[in-house]
Length: 339
Ligand SMILES: [Fe+2]
Image (cartoon, rainbow, N blue to C red; front, top):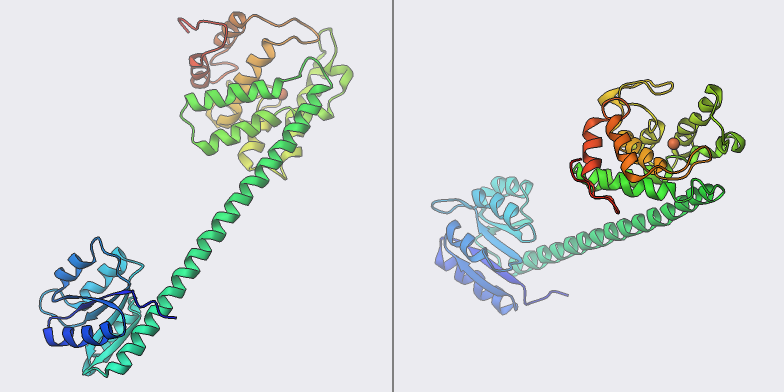
């Protein structure tokens, strides 16, 4: 059914042509407006919702052909029909290639004009409905994707926490590292996507410890070099575990979270700025959280001692820019004066 309240703007320099079209289309129930030039047409379009413009191809000043792309660009929901003398049929076809919906030829057969107008408005309506439906579908997909990510993140969190819960020394470590890493990322002005990656990296960075011998991990004495090397496989193992389900940045972050800025870490293949930024952030967050927690082989350091240690290792173990950002974060229980 045609919605006869639709608004049609008739643009033609000849008053008689405008009147003829207006009378016929008004009788059909459309709301009609007139403009005698391109400038007046743009004026009428501004601030008014217009469903259709019937546009004379040849007008003094700016022609209908010149006006067409402006209307298409400025009012993409407005359909345009060209009105032309029979001899200009090729130009009219040219206009259709540029986005006009149809053309009508002068002298008009008013019955055909009405049919064309109805057809164009019907097509426009269908196109808008399809576009709205596409937008609705895109929105639904986006919502579902968010929901799936949320559920997945919850499952991963549960896995990381279950792993930590086995060991009283590491309980809460992933969450603590995540909070600090996210705070550093914000301090560095990272994008929301990068912050989201940090969140995943923080939660999952030690998931590879599932492959570490519990006896070695919980050893109270000093680790032998071989034992230390065994523990450090967790970074590579963890990257392999999460690879199928997180993006490449998070995988890299986990793979390199024990790299030292100066290249002195174990089996390190990248150095300095070549270490992914997320991994350099995790390194600081991880070290601080670990130092301020009890470990089988030592008691927790005080926050002041841990901060001094971060500062001492800036430029060697830690990226100076990341360490400086970390030192700007307010740490509960301590006044960060002078750091
Ligand atoms: Fe680790």
